[in-house]
Amino acid sequence: MIGYSPIGSGDQKVIVLHGWLGDHTVFAPLMPLLDRDTYTYVFVDYRGYGASLDIAGDFTVEEIAADVLELASHLNWERFHVIGHSMGGKVAQYLAASAPERVQSVTALTAVPASGVPMDNDGWGLFSGAIENAENRYQIIDFTTGCRLPATWINSVVSASFETTTKKAFAGYLESWVKGNFQDLAEGMTLPFNVLVGEHDGALTEQVMQDTFMRWYPNAHLEVLPGAGHYPMQETPAYLVATIERFLGKNSG
Image 1 (tube, helix red, strand yellow):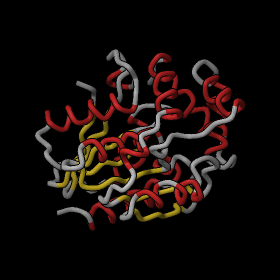
Image 2 (cartoon, one colour; image 1 turned 180 degrees about the vertical axis):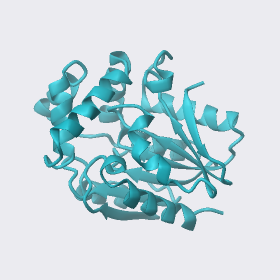
Image 3 (cartoon, helix red, strand yellow; image 1 turned 60 degrees about the vertical axis):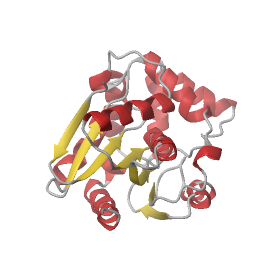
Image 4 (cartoon, helix red, strand yellow; image 1 turned 90 degrees about the horizontal axis):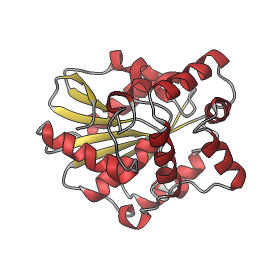
């Protein structure tokens, strides 16, 4: 069973999925701000990350989804909402497509589309080089947050990414979230989608969301988060919580 950290005791159940560059602790700034009476949040760690650091696996989007369903069943959660950040947003789509009877809604937070992310040779070199190289990780984080945040913050995210992941898992997930494509499986899903994109995200932009999520999912709502890039949970946590819980409140029942 993958590791997880629960917060709250509310009737509405929410599973939170982190991205590629670190474990669930990336969400730490928003945790004190959550409505713990209405919701029960479970923050998971994928195989090879955080509390699941020593769990072996294939390290794919599909495997994460299967592990999350196993965890939900262990918790006796028949129905739940899913919040997925970046790579976790791709997992959230696969979860919803493969288990539509269990997923109430999806919040896609600066999320990777189901079709993956097209990269040229230079782009792939930057991201694959990040498996070993801290400078590559720095460049990725800096670019995706608008090249405007302090070096101390970027370095802290880089350090956490090395401390909370194994290189084998990091490499496996990269291949899966970039190159994996299950658009045919996901397209047309009618559950509510909350598509959130950071104003300063240089990679997963508003236009990317318009060309993917907003074309594929008829009940998707798109919002641009002011003052945030790829890490709204770190950059604007209070505003993000308000946005997420407003959506959850409208789609709980």
